[in-house]
Every structure is written in C-alpha cells, then in structure tokens.
Image 1 (cartoon, rainbow, N blue to C red):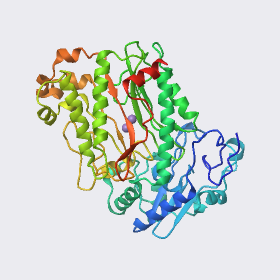
Image 2: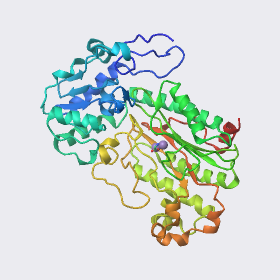
Image 3: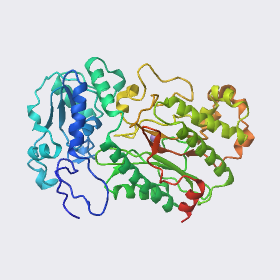
Image 4: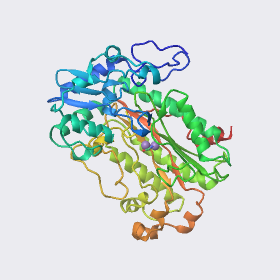
Length: 480
Ligand code: GLY
Ligand code: MN
Ligand code: MN
C-alpha cells in the first residue's frame, strides 16, 4: 500500500493511506471542483454565510465517539472531513476556519494536517477557528448535529436548532435557495463521485446475492454486502435494509433467519469519502428460484420500474414519473386478478397506494436523500407542495427534471398488514381487492426494485444498470 502523496487526500484532517494502485476508487475530486463550487455559491449570495462541518457525537466519553461525518453543505464546498471547522463564504471570498491539530493527536490518532497543509490541499485561505469572531452576523441553514447547533448558537448568539429545514425565513431561506441552486444539477466531479458510489454499490449487491443461503441470518448477508463497501474504502450511505420482511419499508432489524421460500429485500448503498451516495434495492429468492407467484409479482414491479424509467427525461415533471409507476403496477395487479375494476378509476381512488404506499423516488447526491435537510424546499419546485392523496403523500420530489439531476426510481409491492387489514385504511377499496386471489400470493411480503439515475441532456443514464434485476439473471447469481 503506497502513501497517497497528492495534495488532496481523505481522512479526518490528516492524510490517509489509499491503495490507489490496486483500486480505481475511491478517487478524490480535484481541489479545483471545490474552488469552482465556492465561486458559484458566492455569486448567488447577498451576504455572508457560515457552513459548519460539525462534530462527532461522543458515545460515553469524549474519545469514544461515533464516526465523524461532516455536515453535507460543508462537504460539498470543501470536500474534506475537517471536524470542528466552518466555511465562511460571502459574495467576495471564502475562508475555511479550522481547529489547529491537537497536540496529543500525533500520539493517539496520527499526525494531523497543519492549517497550511489544509490550505494547500483544499486551495482555500485557512484561518484558526478562534479567529471566527463571536456574534458575527451570518446566514445559516440548520445543522443536523445537536452539538453543532449548540456551538453555533453560542458563537453567533442566536437560536439555532438542529434539523427543521422547513421553517427557514429571511436570509437563511435565501441561503437555502442559493445552496439548492448550486447543488441541484450535479457537476462533473459530482457525477464522477456518484458513479464511484454506484460501482461499489454494485459490488455490494452482487456479494449479497451470491452469499445468500437458506438458514443464514439477514445479518450474514448484510455483513457480506457491507464488507464489499468497507473493503472498497467507502461506507454505507444509510442504515442497510436487509430483510425477509420487506413489507416493513425501513426495516432496521437483521436477526431474521432466511427461509427456503422467502424473498430477501436488500436496500444498501455505498457512500464515497466525499459523501456521495448510492441507493439501490434488489429483491431475490433465498433458494435461488422464484416461486411462480413471486416471479409474477416481481415482474409486475419490474414493469412498473420500466414504465417510470421510460417516462424520465429533461423537462418531465417527476410527479408524472411517480404516477406512471403506480398505474403500471396497478395494471399488473388487475392482470393477475388481485384487484378488479377500471384502471383509471381504481388509480384515482388510491388503489395503487394500498400496495405501493411510498413515492417512486427522491433526489440523490451528496446524501441518499439529497438536501432533505432543507425539508421539501429542494424536492418541491416553488409553488408546489405535497399532495395529501394516499399515493402521493410520501413523494419527496416534484420538480421538472433537469440535466445533471440524479434521482432514484424505486417502485415496490408490499402486503402491509396495517394497510390491508385496517378497515379505516381500506375504506371502500375493500371491495376492489379479490382477497382469495391475493391470498395465493402470501409468499410475497415485500418487493422493491431501486436504481440510481442521472438525467442527461437527451434522456437519462441508469448509473446502477450493472446490478442484475432480470429474474433469470438474479436467479443465476443467487444460485451460483
Ligand atoms: N434507502 C432509502 C430509500 O430508498 O429512500
Ligand atoms: Mn431511495
Ligand atoms: Mn433505498
């Protein structure tokens, strides 16, 4: 393993050995990409803004901590994980205020970069954090970390609450809008990061499929998938979902045993050291063979995904992509005899949402749900708001798509007991479901198929295309 000697390197704020000769990732972005991003943001600002990196929360004493992951807006404009730092940016300049290396760091965590080295690596003026004057007047967007919020509140002598991006006003709202303007359409460096995340996410899903055997636990498959990510120098982009209970949409448990007749749903993605995410779901049969009922419903979900993908392109309203998936899913359920009636009438009455209650996808970027720290401000175009309708309520994106945006496309079919057995949820949809036919599909609890897509000038590119999803291909890989 050779010492990575480029000016830019990953690590908290010290150079890290990267096995650059043997792996094509993770590849850092050039410092010039961040210089360019800062100068674009400066052009959209009316005054000064502060973007903090944040702090790693302690577990039980200060040196036993959760892994540090810088706040995303900081990462976007600095590209380095510098704990305790903050980026000052105004219409004329950008300054990185950073803590000097702690004298004990060389003993406990390894030599850290000096402020001069940081300035060289990030191509930015760096000053010691103590020079950030208390009480300065700057715009902020809410940080995620509670400790960061406290630090900012004390420094700036104003109320700062972690989270809560929906309630911004005045200059803070203007800053949020400027951030969205810069970040919504990904630049070349971002696209390169997304492609790296997609490549490692693909390794992870292949590892998951080929490690699956009846009798293992969900945790074993999760371990194989995360090993592929960690071994590639990345980390999971979010809490991995690896479960035979796919009907629990964000299942956080991994103790289940894989039964011979189960489907396994894996929603797992890699994150590059600069914070760019992959977000992919595949669903496969534990035995390596779909039952006829599992295959029939799997093909319905795959067709719904194909309809959503076919609808994508610049200028397309994402709500219509969501509806294309819902209609195709419902059409498939009608063909299988699970629901009865006229497709348009059933769709309008919310029948698709009984089995597909979530949105077809969301923005993807420097986080699995890019910029959702700003509430619906990033996902919803000005003048648009979430609909209260059952099928649309959880849709996180309703913009007209633009080249350079990245989104997920992730329809699913689920038999969720709360939706299907609660008379209040069902209402008059109870009569449109053929419960006898549905009963024959009891070996399908949850199927989701999710890919990451970049919108281009002329259409779109599926970044995660290489991950098998055709049922024959999935069967081959699981059985191999
Ligand atoms: N992995 C979370 C999601 O798909 O939104
Ligand atoms: Mn997703
Ligand atoms: Mn996902």
